[in-house]
Length: 477
Ligand code: GLU
Image 1 (cartoon, rainbow, N blue to C red):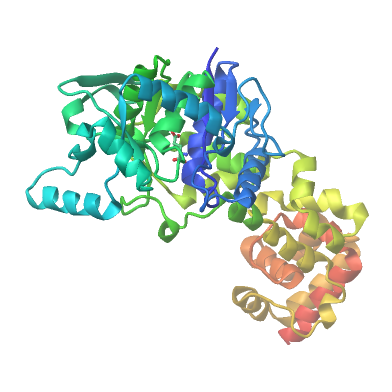
Image 2 (cartoon, rainbow, N blue to C red):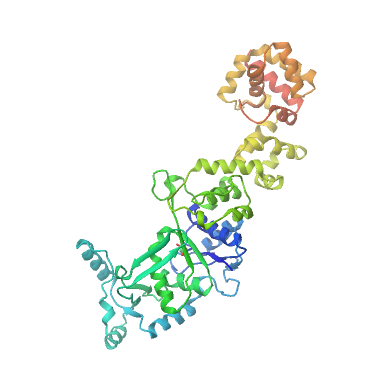
């Protein structure tokens, strides 16, 4: 059974980068009818906040990334390996610290942050990679007891074996080898007794029986340390896969500067979850089908072998493309919910036809609001400040008053039907093609582009249409 997980630290809002990690892990689990687990890594008690836990769960649900095990609303967790918030797992960690202490694989370190910083600087200026020099690794039991008696609070360091090669098969990047001599003894418990990332992250993956960990490339160098810990504890490590990071067009890590924003912000802007899923599922993962797919189908297409090793470039135009696909292909209910704010602007009886007529021309709910206002704002002809676009004004001027007078008459004859209106008008004005359609569109909608006029005209109604044509006649007279 494949089990993957998303293990966010709730210290801020979830962005596209971390949600893509969640998505890949979810897709891997769904593809294999496995389990997708949610674990909250809230050991940094100062920066972790419950509101971020709640928001990230809301984001996952909004995207449809349901988890089968792990944190639920209450934050207390549900499943065999609860609790799933690291802040509640202190006793479990203590058990494993003791195990390491008993086997002599760890030692207390009393070096102060200042001492460590000086040591790192010295190493750097000597052209060496900074790593812990091992000052406290040789302390005798009585020295340790002495320092503890003075009230000094030690960190706990893991004793890295010398002269070993640590290797693992990364499911994305292939065989990875690290020299243990390049890794200094590292901290697994902070001086305030909270567990350090390397430790609790690895221990929890093992205890929760996670089989696969897909995570950002920035964690690659953490993995040998985590393998050392698990090995020392006799715990089974998951298979790690380090996915390429998302970069902006300038090849630097995706940030606000590139337009990256939180999932919450994207939802508020009116992006559809299926658009985000379809975009992210292809960002650094290639070879699947190319059409808009629901999560179940994205999962069917997901294959870890097709995860890219090169940085994935963020391109908002692509996201926009999937958004348009999503609007075109969403079912009526989804669309109606998405456009909820438009409802009050449109007569109930015409709502379904309105949505169906405009869906090919909108990308965000605000576009629909604009069309609702264009079509249903009362007394268009008398609205002083009606916002014709500049090209629409130009069209109206060029067509001239006589054209619109004819149009008013033709509309009458046509009984409000678009095809009839244009047929009659073509005869009476001798105009055709663009010269015929554009001025009508401009006069009736104030725009030179938009949904099919054949669908808009009935929504507008004959009376309102007639007023608008008359107004155009007056404007261009
Ligand atoms: N809490 C870690 C993070 O948010 C998890 C890293 C991992 O996936 O192992 O970066």
